[in-house]
Image 1 (cartoon, rainbow, N blue to C red):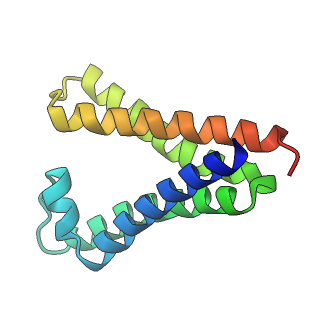
Image 2 (cartoon, rainbow, N blue to C red; image 1 turned 120 degrees about the vertical axis):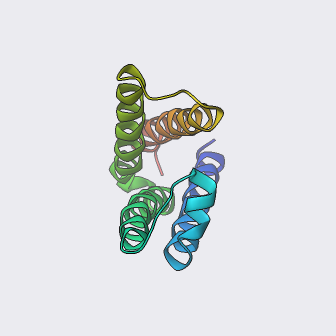
Length: 128
C-alpha cells in the first residue's frame, strides 16, 4: 500500500509541477483554463501567484513521496489546497456564482487535501 500511495502522491506532484511550469512559461494556459483575464502587468502577477501556489504544492508532495519519513512535507500542499477550498466556500457564501468550473476546482481541492492528509498519516505510521 505504501508504494502505491507514494506513486499516487508523486504523480499528483508531477502533474501540478507540470501545471506550474507550463503556466510560468506561458501564463495564457492559466487564463484560458481558469477563465482569468490578465492585462499588461497583471500577467506577471498571474505568473508569480499561480506559479508559486502550484510549484510549492508540487514540491511538497514530491518531497513527501520521495522521502516518506518526511511526511510532514505533505501538509504544505494540504494547507494550500485546504486554504483555497475554504476561501472559495467563503466567496460562495458572499455571493460569488457557483459555476461548473468552481465545482470542479472544489472537487480537486477537496480530493487533494484528503489525499495529502491520508498519505501524511500513513507515511508517518509506516515502517519504511
